[in-house]
Image (cartoon, rainbow, N blue to C red; front, side, top):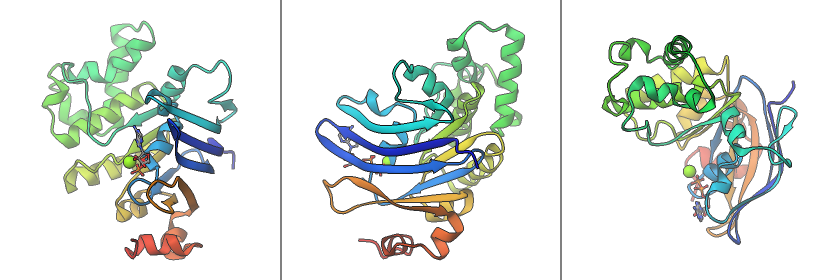
Length: 258
Ligand SMILES: Nc1ncnc2c1ncn2[C@@H]1O[C@H](COP(=O)(O)OP(=O)(O)O)[C@@H](O)[C@H]1O
Ligand SMILES: [Mg+2]
């Protein structure tokens, strides 16, 4: 199958500290890939290299190659802002723009991209909120502040905001870790629906979540604190959980880690 993302020989640094080393993997379109591994092994760092957010951190530097379809994301002349439009991000803590209405939160990315008629914006806002399974809950309060929603609703609002600009890829960094169990299940259901249209990469510390939502799972580990994180193995999720190739993966998923 054609790959949506193809990463090779990727290193990421904070100043002189090598945080992740020599990562190569591919991600298939319209699939969910889960990143698992102990805290500090570089999952978030790696995720942020995929849409050129790592370099926003002072000292943040990347070596290696990330291809999105035929586009070399670290190639000469590539605008990081356009990369972030094609590869959206959803964070651990829901972060709607606090002073903006529900409507304006979803419309924000489009407004940055250019001029739209009110009717066009209305359509995209409705479609995106429906796509994020939030429309029915907010359609009567579109002009109220996004920050007035519950945590789970705010996270779905952030997903609506991310999909409004029709990215190819959605990156999610522990998107449920600040949510209650019911809101978590709502997001997991949503991920299952979104993968029909988008390619999704999710970091999760929750093994059951990785098993429930993902098609492929990548296990990362580090030899010791201060050592770089590495990709240990990536495989079909069923395989990783039933019969991983590497002992360290088995130890981690069975809770025998550390
Ligand atoms: N802004 C930063 N500056 C310096 N070091 C960082 C920064 N963010 C993360 N690190 C370090 O990079 C390593 C990987 O961190 P991170 O990507 O957050 O891991 P994970 O998401 O797997 O918990 C850790 O050693 C962490 O301390
Ligand atoms: Mg992290």
